[in-house]
Amino acid sequence: MQESNIIVAISTPAGMGGIAVVRVSGKGCIEKVDSVFRSPEGKKLSEQKGYTVHFGSIVGNDSVLDEVLVSVFKAPHSFTGEDVVEISCHGSIYIQQSILQLLISEGAVLAKPGEFTQRAFLNGKMDLSQAESVADLIASSSAATHRLAMNQMRGGFSDKLKEIRTELLNFTSLIELELDFSEEDVEFANREKLKETAFYLCKHIAKLAESFSIGNAVKNGIPVAIIGETNAGKSTLLNLLLHEEKAIVSDIHGTTRDVIEDTINIKGLTFRLIDTAGIRDTLDEIESIGIERTFKKIEQASIVLWIVDAETANGHIEELGRKILPLTEGKKVILVFNKVDAISSDRKTEKEKLLEDEIPDRLFVSAKYQKGTDALEDMLVDAANIPDIGDQDVIVTNMRHYEALQNALEAIKRVSDGLDLNLSGDFIAQDIRECMHYLGEITGQISTDEILGNIFGRFCIGK
Image 1 (cartoon, rainbow, N blue to C red):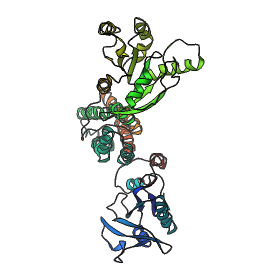
Image 2 (image 1 turned 30 degrees about the horizontal axis):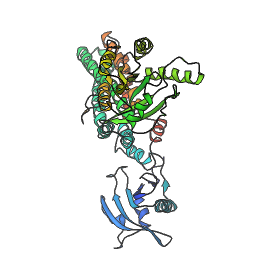
Image 3 (image 1 turned 60 degrees about the vertical axis):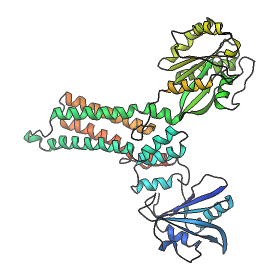
Image 4 (image 1 turned 120 degrees about the vertical axis):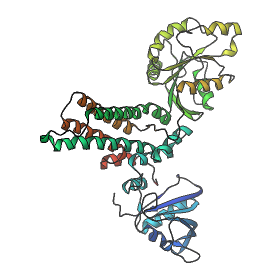
């Protein structure tokens, strides 16, 4: 990327709307917009103060394209750290593209995906983990994902990493100072104190890494496999929870032959509902493949909704349980008796005893008559077991960050082991530097063009 370029892009979503925003950034961009902007008072944008908004017209080929509001931000007090101009125009696709093409004809270059945020990172306006959280904030689809992205963008994660790296820096300084005076046999670092510090750092890095299981579930949705025999009402229940006809519903057995997925937001949490092929013995080759995928989805899910036809349920489901339950170890299983409208109270009491020791969480519903689904949603939220996330909580949501933390954790464990074994200081210092390296990869203190290209290439154009 050539930072001398003036870049331009439409920052609002594609399509027609009430207004659209064309963003321009780079040294000289204010003067560039001045060449196509006409103010009723004849004022120049380049002569105005930063953080000001100005009314006028965009003019091309001696004709007015649109009446606009232009916001001016002057370096270094802008999102990118450079001079920035944002043109708010009417949302006509023709107007948007005309202004964009006009600025390109004046010498601006169309921005690449994420290039505005990349410049913010390169100009020190945010570190790499904060820059990545910008994309997460744009993609946030629930209160929980929004809260996590805002916390990270405000620097909560970065502050914790800075604290750990400062401890590591102090740690390695003492070790390396000893190496400088190795011939004098001088000990600057109290080994017991260093062991305490290594233990402290190991605990905090491990805590950050462990938070990924929560962060990943919140960010990508908690996978819920809906399983059961054919015609138990799995697809009907899926459609009811999603409030749309996502899956085909039929009295014919084996209608669902493949996996159907969609997401639902319940009380600020995103769940990925996975409707699977009904489990039964079949000679149909395609249906058999679908049933194999059902068992794979059970293994991949965090929560399993086992749907049972309450009308026909008997001791046979205990036999089926011997196939299913071994795959659910460590997962939350909810036994859902569907079609409760078709049985009496006495029979309901009888059904409640089925698998009561193996699956304590159970519920009676009628997907057909929309009964019991509110209670089922409450059970899903409880089963997710996501703790309340406060504004100050640091939760890791990014796989790249998680892998770097895992590597850093291995390095700091080697430091701790080295101190216990009384290894030479140069070995210990090397492991400390390696730990700092992996933490630096998260914040961008250690980065390569390949890493940056991979990260910012996933952004939308205009951000």
